[in-house]
Image (tube, rainbow, N blue to C red; front, top):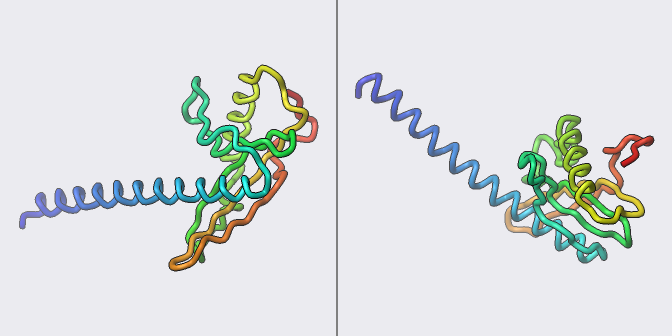
Amino acid sequence: MTPTLTRLKDRLLALVTSRRQKAEKQNSGAFGERQAADFLKAKGHKIIARNWRNPSDRREEIDLVCDDAGILVFVEVKTRAAGALVPGFYAVNPRKKRVLLRAAKSYMRRLTSYPRTFRFDIVEVETRPDASPEIRHFENIRLFRGDFRF
């Protein structure tokens, strides 16, 4: 095989592999979000929205928006395989927090009446082969500054 054909074959293989990995990641994320929603419902949360996106800026997304006894809760769901190098909690880095803050502000601007209070939670879903997932819920993560006013 000529070097040009070899490079073309390698690039095509990389593209197919990349698309397969992206589809697997999306399936894993959707699975994690379903598990997180079921977990939160069992804790008494009411699911208001799933995968809410700002109509003005589609990059701003909130995985779950819930009501917890009158508290508006913005939830970021992180799905990880057992033994992942970076746990889901730490995957929500400062850049991601800024995006979530913008999305939360956009969501609240569209409300007709403002909630009494609101908070940000992270739900980490750890998948394991041949076992049910382990779910960890971190409540009231610092996303909004103490002096935040809407």
